[in-house]
Length: 187
Image (cartoon, rainbow, N blue to C red; front, side):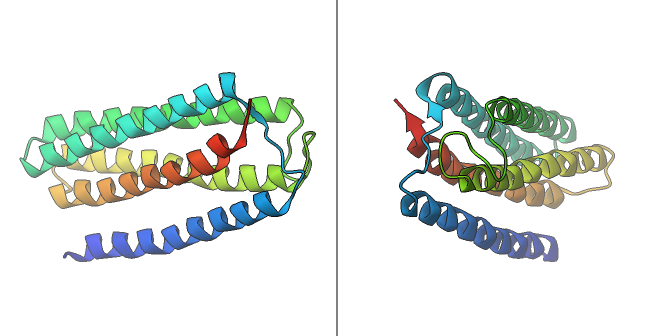
């Protein structure tokens, strides 16, 4: 294993621990507070967050295609797939910011919440904000990789390492989505 890949795996492990602690803490807060809100009506909030999930899953597929093309030496195809992945990431961030603005209009803030436990806002914005930041950084990272790989300055290993990061960010969402959204549905 190369040093780049090892470094990324070590980063992913440390970041996985960070997200694990946050999600376990969220779970504790949620179940320890009887007035924890169920703020998300099935429609449109859950449908909207499901759309965000589909976008991230699709971007994971495009990243697989980018890594595959890069390993075959098809620079043009790899760059195209990376750009598609970046588009998915940017769309996810845009959708997430739209959701945040809606919640802020509803009165949810990091330390206040019109529907119940004030900690909901801090936990929600903290966890989803950290994840959204990871996605935004991933889009920038992929842009750098795409630019460099297209010009022959980066290798297929660099594309693969960026793919590890992207898949990690997608995997984290697969825990955030059910815990924060699906378990908070108001029927």
